[in-house]
Image (cartoon, rainbow, N blue to C red):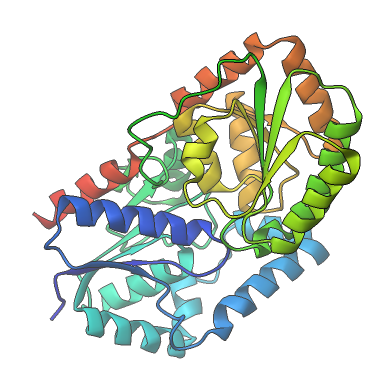
Length: 370
């Protein structure tokens, strides 16, 4: 018999799936402190090698065969995704162990693999429900279309896409991607008239940011050697300690004016102090920037989800694209000359943002349980 707990499952591929799961788990705990809820990578204790393999396979795929990876990400194969994963029975066994340990009755998956496996457990009556949380503005082709209790998505456009694939529209909830709580008290911005630019070149896991290191160094060099005038620059390197040392040394040699930070636990608060965000096109950081209302410049996207994120924001006219440091430089010059464009992009961002996304998802889940 299925238990009453909620397991919010992710895979340790990048950091977005984990951040979304933890944001959602924290919100549920705040609203229903007596409800058993946990967020975890269900395979991390059994096998630490699986996330490394998945990260390596993704990196190899996007580097060696980006167009093939992008096509596979978008286009559903004839081979049923549930059958594909249930053929790998060991993954099912791992998940059953975790479900029984935590007396789980509902799985909420922020990654496609635990969602597919959760559907398998639901078919076997081991759990009652499985929900999918899509953490980008496009959907991987393997998200299952049958036996999922519901989906939480970032936009009406994505809802329509999933409905076209055969998912009941009534089970698709446009809530936004679950993000951390925004600070209740907004940090004060400096009284000067400077335009504040934030470049995020690293996060919790450095793997997804490896292609950004050279980009950050070249962009910093441009910002310090050319006369941009009225801007203030901050760069976040995350857990990439070597990158932080290199950029700090670069600033010292050039005698430039830039702030180099390491890992920032409360990134939304720092984002609120800035006007422009330059970042890789990850679903979570974009969602936070939209919720805050930032002018966004997106770096060159990787194939698959990042390309889908860039395309979505391009269709909405809600972000600039700077595939190279030189292109970012051009965009910054445009914004410095026409600062009203920054305000226009901030308004577009806020109109697309879902600052209460985790609350919206939690309400759907709790209403279902009741």
